[in-house]
Length: 69
Image 1 (cartoon, rainbow, N blue to C red):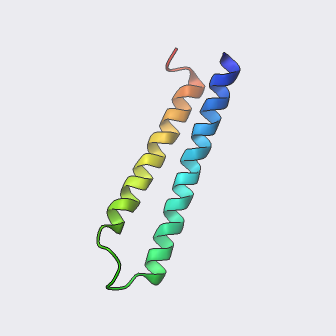
Image 2: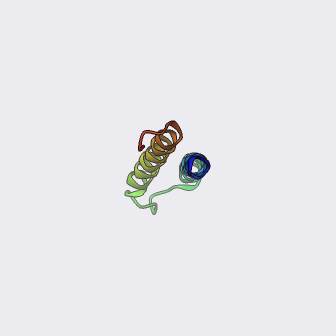
Image 3: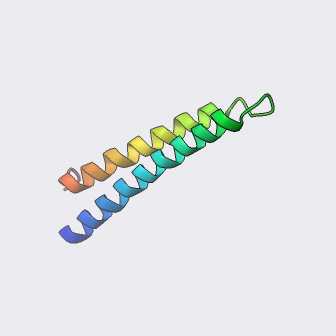
């Protein structure tokens, strides 16, 4: 069971890192190509994307350290 917990923790951390990468890529795309037709809600989407990425990182670290045992 311990091996599966470590694997799950690593997968969740990788998902969190990917979420941050996708958020940075999206921010750069909007910064470069955004104009008056860009939705004003895109910054909310970026914020919640980063927030979700942070939650995934915290959850992955908690799983790896055995916080849920």
